[in-house]
Image (cartoon, rainbow, N blue to C red; front, side, top):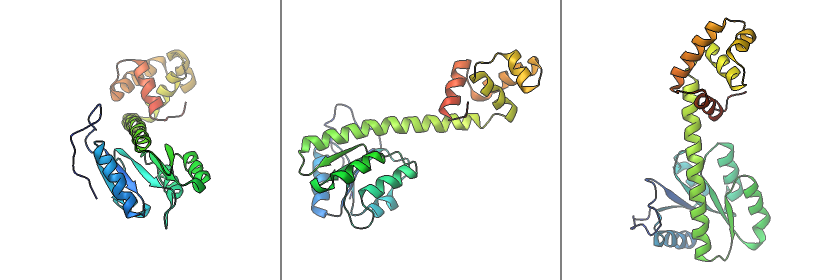
Length: 217
């Protein structure tokens, strides 16, 4: 169920496509949470099961998920573990009963953003959602920077990548030439080509891309 748009009541409007997923096998709970989120200016989509949520999920979706820790089939902990294992950057807020605290803590250790114990105040839920969204935006931005960096590094030849790795290690051109058994002039040529392919103007920018791409030092 997708809630209709509402004039934003937040300090800043939500980015396009940002959605809060409500995942609970109890229809009354889903409706209640959807109404609460709607009243706070959020768009929500409800799911009766974790499996249904995963079937509908777009991997690079923006937003967060509110998940009941105990559900038939895949529970909240298993869902969190699945998202973490598949590198899906969607913050999860786990909703738990008093007897499920240990399970909720395990979900947080697996990567959940927060857990809320029933019964909870509406303000507590909205606070958790807001924090999860901020965390998700940062995670998604980092993931996109990493993807862009890896794409740039993939343009380099094997030798250009070797030169970049040596530069990141802080070695001057003459030492790089010695390590790679090539001439200093060849190092300069590879360095110039590397800078052009990475579309950077300074070595510091190249280093940042190397690190963001997750390359080995």
